[in-house]
Length: 140
Image (cartoon, rainbow, N blue to C red; front, side, top):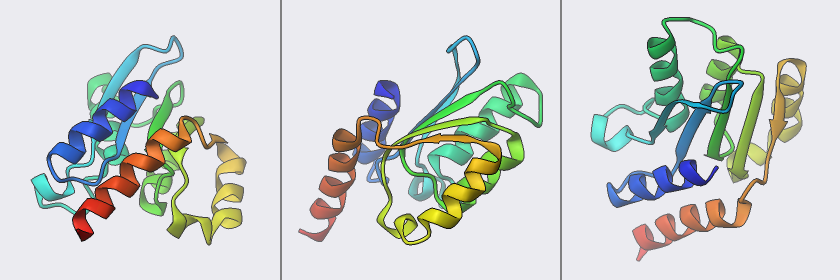
């Protein structure tokens, strides 16, 4: 998670929403990583999770990441959750909870529980503070 936080900080320096994502294999070796790039790439789908998953699939030359785990600094949005499910990632670890996602928490958590182990609140304060500061700075 520490590396994902470093990636989130890098995203913030690029005026991107500070979210970082790391994918590791079962030996805990880093396969891929990314931070949000929606603004840089002018692509609303260029979320950290999506970019890291695409890179991992390309690097491993596979469509499924069954033996991989995903670490991200913010609870994945529904688009990223769908991709996580489609690629067969079994364990998802995230830092901060997303307020917009919290409204649908039960629905989303049940979706994950069918196929994934889902762990939230890892380094939550640091992850949450990064996002809060980013949006506070935007408003000022």
